[in-house]
Length: 186
Image 1: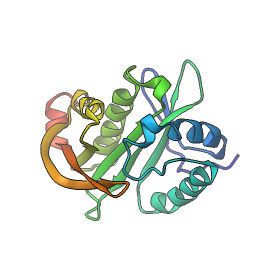
Image 2: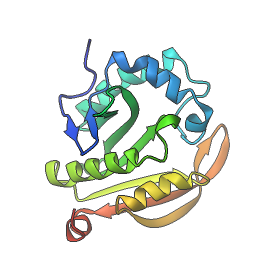
Image 3: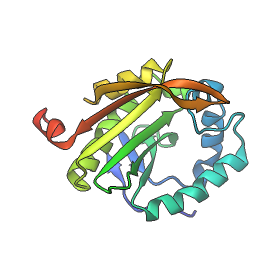
Image 4: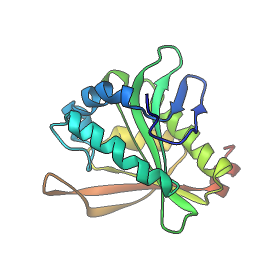
């Protein structure tokens, strides 16, 4: 099976963050195809089908060459794909943005918060980034709570800052600087 991402694997108490592979495609299609997931994401097509998953896996190869990191989220207790978390470097190469999603059966279990905390640790300690940001579309308050639990700070709201299916939505921005993250016990 071809590994798509780099060979970086991260571990937390309950999770393995590993490179996504073609073997993940059925789960990607199933979870991303759920409108409760897809409609909270601005870049995820809906309905979501096999071709979207293949195209996305092919596209991240180029992103990885630019220094981005993409991880499949997997539970240690029951291996198998449950979601994605990624770090996209900004053009300055000393800051980045995190994005994530997880399948509905895994909501409200703390998995995304745990994965985000590890990706922030990786960003600051292993990659030496100075700042990491994230955002969510208004109406996706659960994502904002994940960011807060991972010690990201609310920054501001951009009115009409993102689009979904031709409609503008407000964008809620969060972020954390490396020195803040370290000061608070990283």
